[in-house]
Image (tube, rainbow, N blue to C red; front, side, top):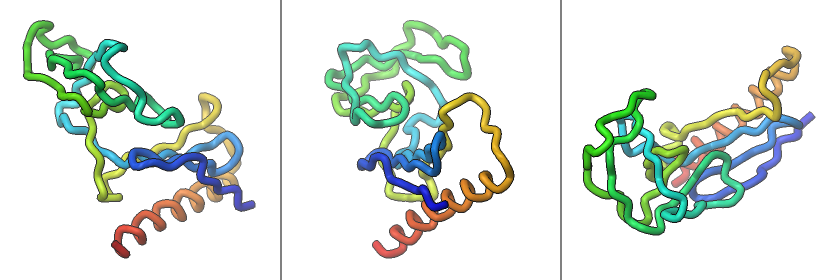
Length: 145
């Protein structure tokens, strides 16, 4: 039962179908801001990096003043200016990110087509094996570069 299929691939994100209802997403970027701050960007200031990307992967089309954002769900000083995000800055789920070639730094997650991930042990074993194949491929590709 080998259903592994690449759904989409880009410089920023790869997405695989492990089996019906389960996707494995590989984000090939890291957060720029270690503070885990999120920023609200006006809609007319960005466009999607890729239409098939899972999550909100945006690139700025206009510079945006950098004000205090939301850190750990607490509002920072609303008018605290911290500079500016230039055109071309990429955000993922309202956090600034940058590409990385280090597969050890990739952010990976499993997305299910429903809320709870209930399954039999055999299915979880198969899902785990498929994820291990994908991870091994990224590590081997890194070694061959």
